[in-house]
Structure formats: structure tokens, C-alpha cells
Image 1 (spheres, rainbow, N blue to C red):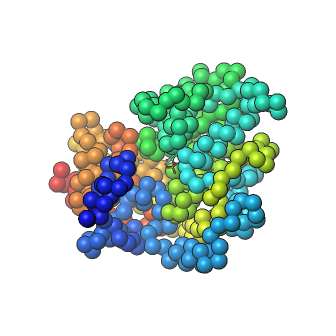
Image 2: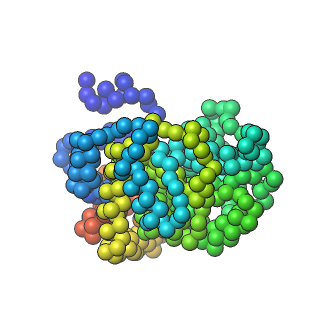
Image 3: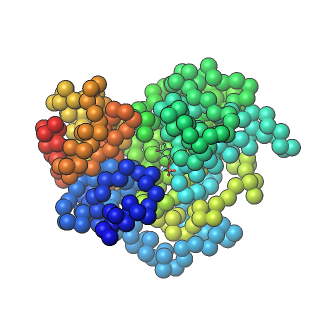
Length: 394
Ligand SMILES: *Cc1c(COP(=O)(O)O)cnc(C)c1O
């Protein structure tokens, strides 16, 4: 039985898998079982923030695994405390953090905090509605799916929890606020929705207005967080202070971890929320190392330098291939090329893969780029050279 047959026989078919067999990686490079190299402009969907095979991350994980992987949250966990401190320091927010294991789970926790905020001590629900945006993506659990503003994802799996409404855009949020509204949850740059950044001033105005009305602002930074936009959080870039920020993807560099940061330190009490794995020694030690590597890269100026180079290179494809691309979108190292009507983003992703550069599709018509945050100039040049070769063949 080949590996592909094994996968198809024993793994549930929930993914439209490409059966390339990657066996190792080195920063932006991936290598398959036949020894072919690929430039990875996808980072395992914004996860491998410090690149593949990062020796410092590998060393931290190995060292921690030899000592302790897990003890449960019944006891003190040194790297968890240190990671929560670093997240507060690096973000500049006066927050406490809860650790989960994924983005959907972090968002579930954020929704629980909001629901608890809307409930009085006797358990009477005063406010419960949460406004999210159309084209948003918040995860795959039943509640996170319902929070996701894409009706096509609500066809099955009902009945869903009540209390989610979808705004067309930031301006439309105001129209949906009523006496039952307890929170607004948004991505500052919609990732799955097509790498669409929100307008900074509109977000700042919304944040102010929500604060005035005592409605919580939850920013889903599962994709935008951990230096993806050039700052630790996109919320830093937008110069807002959300009530709740959720994190996951890039935080562990590939080790599963999610986080909920909140300025409201007293909403949840002992017993209100929990997770068996959440914040264990292995995951938080990995995340601490990821933050250290990326903070150094930010402070040395390298991150901002590569970010500008990447943007410049990507923008040049629009005038060069006007029949394919409408415009360049995104921010930081979360970028996309919006494909012209009548052209298929999926075809471009396929052609790029044939030239051995990994890019992703987002939304209906966007080719998405999420390079590793430790990308080198050489890797970038090679990746774009291959991408251009792919476009020339289309
Ligand atoms: C990926 C993503 C999620 C879901 O994260 P999982 O770890 O897959 O549960 C939630 N929100 C945003 C913005 C994401 O990009």
C-alpha cells in the first residue's frame, strides 16, 4: 500500500489534498521525497513563522521535551507564565492571557468571555449578540463557524447557537447594534476572506464608539498576529486597544497553540473555562522561542526591510500582467494579488506549484502570499522568479 493509498483508505477525506510528499524544510524551502525543492510562500497557512527546520525552535522543543511536556493546568507552568508576560510586554497592552490549542478554540473562549460579560451574577442573560463581518473567518467549531460571516458555511451542521449577526462592512456595524449587543468581533485584515485590510480610521472610530457604549471589541488575530503585519499584533499597527485579542497560527511556529488576551481580567473566574492541553510546557516553551526569534528580527530592522522588498516585488506583477491581476492587496507579509474577472486564482496557484513555488488561494479570486517571517532575499528572489515563470506559462 502506498502512502497515498493509506491516506485515502484511513484518513477522513475532509481536505482536497495535493499528494506531494514533503519530507523536510529549511527556512522558506521545502523538499519532497524525490529531493525536489519548493519555495514556500504559504508557511503552512501563516503557521511556520520562523521558517521550517528552525534550529533554535527545534532545540527549545527538544530541551523542553526531555524535561517536561505536560503536567496539566492544576500546577504552575513556568513557560506559560513567561509567555503571558512576554505577550503583555510586546503588545504594550495591560492584559492577562488564557492559553488554548487552536484559533477556533481561542475564538470560542473569546465568545465565552463576551457572553459572560453580558450575563449577571444570577445567570440572567442581559446582552448576548455578537456582530461579525461578512467574508470573515473565525474557525470550524459549531460556534466559530456560526461567527464566520459566510452563509455558504452554514448550510449543514445546524441548529447553531443563537446571537450572531453579520455586518456588510465596518460602517454597517453601527446599524446592527441594539440593546442586546455585547461584542463585535473582526479581523483587521481578513485572511480567508481575500487578504482584505480594514480601513484604519474606520476601525479606530469603531473602537472608540464601542468603548463608549460598553460593547466589547474582539479582534481575531489568529492570522494577523505574531508579526505577520510587521508589528506583534495588527491591533498595534491600527493603534487600537481591543478588549480581547485572539491568537494561534504563527505563535507556536508549528506547535499547536492558541491564546486569548484580554484587558478584562475579572470576567472569568476559576472554573469558568479551561483546557487540558492549553498552555502546556511544550507549546508555551516553543512560543517563547518563536517570540524571541521574531523580536530580534524586528529589532534588527530585517523584518521591516524584507516586508518592504516583498511588497515592492509583488506590486510589480500588477502592471506587468494586467490581463491577470487587478490589484495588489494586504499588508506586511500577509499579501495577495486580486485576480481579474474571468481568471481563476486556483489556476495560478496550480501553475505556481508546477514551478515549485507554494502560494495559496484566498476568497474567490485572490492569490495569497504568507511567506515565513524569517525569509531571506535569496529565497524571495527564487520564489518570485518561479512565480513569474508560472505566469508566463499561463
Ligand atoms: C485560521 C483562522 C482561524 C481558525 O484557526 P484554527 O487553528 O484552524 O482553528 C480563525 N480565525 C482566523 C482569522 C484564521 O485565519
